[in-house]
Image (cartoon, rainbow, N blue to C red; front, side, top):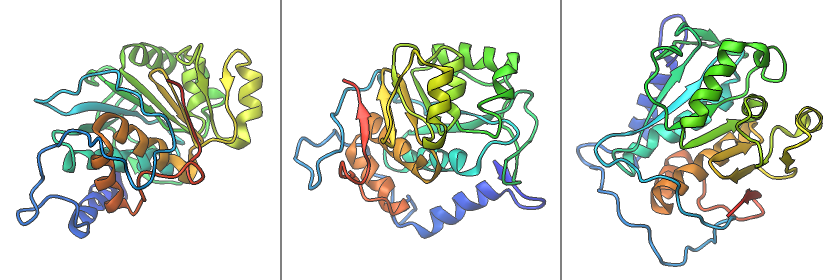
Length: 265
């Protein structure tokens, strides 16, 4: 959880959001059971071709979603997907179990100065089905030389059903060999550097995110909500994503103009 000197900020944020959003369950507004995906034509067509999920979602437990956090991680690339995935449980129970993992299980300090208490270390983390790699200050340089971190990413990422990178998190996944043979994207200002470091990868420019195989790579920044909403829709259906979007004030589904994306069938 994200915390300041006295108050766990992420926990407080989630409590406040649950209190103010009418879409979140309460005794007066219970969570409805998940419904099959609607075959009706939505008012706005999705901005990408729809493909079937790679996995069957567990019905008796939450899907494990692990976030790699290191010193210098950027706030938005961490909190945007964390918030979206946390809210899945209110619209498609049992939803996702979101947690943070730092190398030694110790707190880390974000680039913007927030202190985050890690839920697990590399050694104690449970099996991760969706590995999320937010961008960090040194995702393009010294983090790639951290052998313990890169070995963990390579091992966990190979076993995970899905990979999600935000901004320069794509450099970490690429250096771990997890993006080989796939179409990818990253932060616009770092795409030239990415192309120089990984010339064998199919870099796509001018799009918010790219989904190819089990990897979803994205521009990051304020657009970190885009791939997170997409993955929620991809796994749990448009109706669940629309419920999340109402609580987050994110219109869903987006138009191709508002959210350009590449989904490789």
